[in-house]
Image (cartoon, rainbow over all chains, first blue to last red; front, top):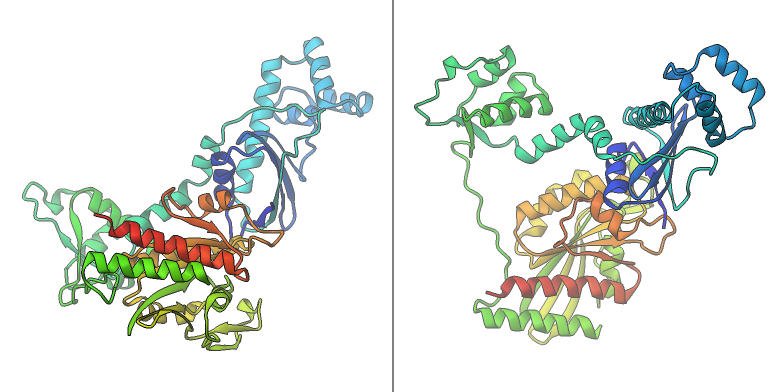
Amino acid sequence: MALKGNLRDFSFSQLLNLISLAKKTGTLQVHGLDKDALLSFEGGKLCYAQNSRNDNGLAAVLVRTNKLTDKQYRVIKNRAENIGDKELGLMLINSNYVTQYEILVSLKHEFVSTAKDLFTWSEGIFQFENNLKPSPDKISLLINLENIIIEGSRQLQEKERLEDEIPSLDMALKFTENPGTNIRNVNLSVKEWRVVSFINPKNSMRQIARTTKLNGFEFRRIVYSLIQAGLVEIVRPEGAEPPSPKISTLPVESPDEQKSLVNRLITRIKSL
Amino acid sequence: MQTVKMVVTGPFSSGKTQFIQTVSEIDVVATERKISSESERIKETTTVAMDFGRITVDDDLVLYLFGTPGQKRFDFMWEILSEGMLGFVVMVDSSRPETFREARRILETFRAYAPTPYVVTANKQDLPDAWETSDMRIALRLSPEVKLLPCVATDKESVKNSLLELLYSILERMEP
């Protein structure tokens, strides 16, 4: 089945995460606004990458990593244009131009750079073709995606984590009753002090964010650091009514009757 | 007469109205209107208040299915509809990954409204662009214990299966 969509809606970090977790083998093609990229994966690891902006041949990669000179590149292009990367690599190793290790390091750098660049694409149609492998004349590697994902999506992760930690800004903050901590002895930035000055169980976090002119991400980041430092805690705003417990409503009370009712529903649905 | 209610929710155009229509014994009391927002115009009409379907169990018991409005500006209806529900179904259009984030948000919102059992249905699995459920589970960040069911809302057996799985979850919750 297809795995396609737009990076606008399904970010590249999510996509890499999916490929890594599902240990997918295949090729991801991304068509951006003014550039394209192609990444191949083997068992959830990056094995090849190329983009439409560069010459992706081995000789060009080695020039970009300063393993070959421009002059050597031109000679290779003139004399060995139709030679595949694997064959060219062997020729260069046998001629003592480069070592196998240098080729592998250069390619790894190139593939990872191409992948990292995709994190900056805000838009692009993507399609993943299962089991489509790179051309046999290309040199494949096996690069773990974890580090690429971690680095590229660090900020995205932080934003999501903060929203998980502080899902609602309708709650309030109060200083913790911890006699060992004195807020005056803590080094705070100007923004943090502005937030701290409004902390009061009567003020919702949303009100404080609005007053201090901080966006939700900035505000959550500050509150999270204050919580982690043990200086404040989240409380229900004073005067707000506690939520009424909302439990599933069954028209009967005894457990046996409730089970019987659900079993009647099951029997009826089966008979539809 | 005893009545119980289940809520069918999910992003805009995920197939909620169709899901209810497929099993309801009455014509669904749909409150659909022509769509005014260009950005959401991928179908002609949308539910603005709620859909309302009914399954009579016996002389003494009726199950009502309520579908929530799909467009964001009718969010305020969700809390009202979730009041007293037995459980809920979160429908996701398997062929529109751009709605997965919204589905996740809706799921979290309903979980906050009521700690009732729920299932997630991967609808439109018959479309060529449909994502596999294993990929959707990762994309939706669903833990393994959450039921993610392949579904085609036009297919009665498929809808029945989703409702039955939800009822089984409700039964499991009742076990001491």
